[in-house]
Image (cartoon, rainbow, N blue to C red; front, side):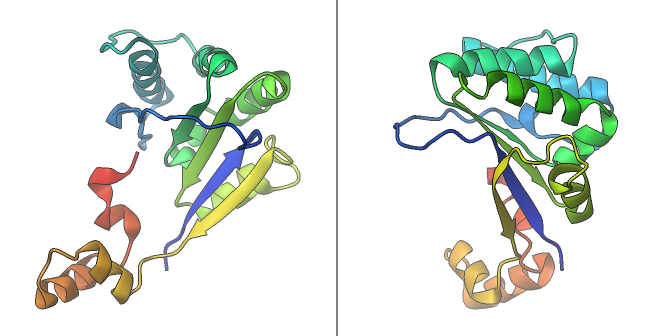
Length: 184
């Protein structure tokens, strides 16, 4: 059974109202090099901040994340890093960089940082564990289980009965397969 965990680091109080703009598909981390992940993250951040397509990159993850924390001083910013284990494995200092910036900006930032990952062992060992750099900075965690058949049928409500069963049989209720085009 495959699970997806979502961790919310340094979440300020949710009393204020806020709007969100989704980052584009460049924000999705993939199993690639640190340079490629940094380029994708940079494009997403700069497009979010400027509203125009960017063809430049920050020099480091620290510089990119410092910029996000600066943006989040003025308004609520939600940064979701999907498949965090991929980007963390490609950039060994990322967790320590996040720790440094969360600690530095915790009183002034309105950033909600959400780390998602399907590798439970990595999320538990490298995010939640006592010796992990991000230990103690997680304010919420959520384990997402695969859809059961009934949930899959509701998701594919526009399908006919037999097609719903086929869809469930093919994807096994895994959200990332069912919802691939809608995840950020």
